[in-house]
Amino acid sequence: MLFLSALRSAAFIAWMAITVVPVAIAALLLSIFVRGNPVYWTCIFWLRLSIWGARVICGVRWRIQGMENLPSAAERDRGVILLSKHQSTWETFAYPTLMSHPLAYVFKRELLYIPFFGWAMSRMDMIHIDRSKRSEAWNKVAARGKELGARGIWVIMFPEGTRIPRGQAGEYKLGGTRLAVQTGMPVVPIAATSARCWPRKSFLLRPGVVDISIGRPISPEGREPAEMMEEVRHWIEAEMRRLDPEAYGAPAARPPTAAPAPVAQR
Image 1 (cartoon, helix red, strand yellow):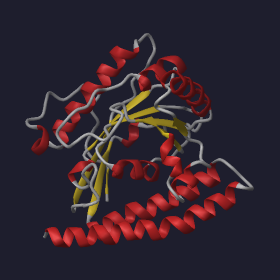
Image 2: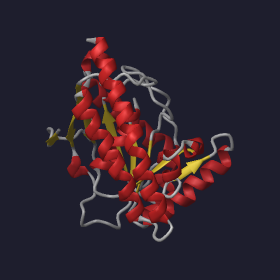
Image 3: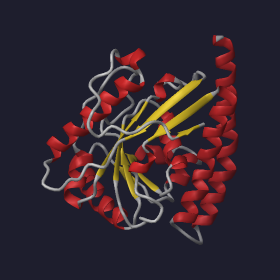
């Protein structure tokens, strides 16, 4: 069984490596003439290929609930801040393929140096920061987040800052809720059980189902960043226990902003 999973995972990695080159070149060439959505959706095409490959080659499927908690396609100018649990590479690839609006990730600038993948990312409307310069990094997040949100681009951040092992919780940093309070954009908490199929710091994928739960928007009006982040943390961690009791133990009391039953499955 382990040998078969390793073989499938190797085939999946090869699939990503082969497909990223032509798509990245296409995005780079396109960016010479246009920017914005055309380049973004060209890059997302490769993510679609990757998520498709994970499903077909490795058996990684997904279920989503709470999509109605996101702004509708008609609300194109409404900015939001998505704050998600971060367990593996899977959700970073999957979210742009599942959302109807362009997303702007906040990420460390070192990723831009990855051949083809990083080069294409550099041509997208993202927020890349130097983590060693915290004050400068925050000023960039605040300025770019406000600008992108005004254009209807959804800013997405992982408040724990890094991938967290299955069944554990990291320290929730305040950047996302600070941005919400400063810009007036609501935050939307997201729980995802991706480590069930693609553990952190591993390229060995296991067949199974990733559950994604999207909570109701939380308004920043009259709130403090720390208090607001505590609500986000409580909702995400309670939802993780509900979605993955095998790893987290008995589910906690269902939070008031919990999402409804699953609405989509692949």
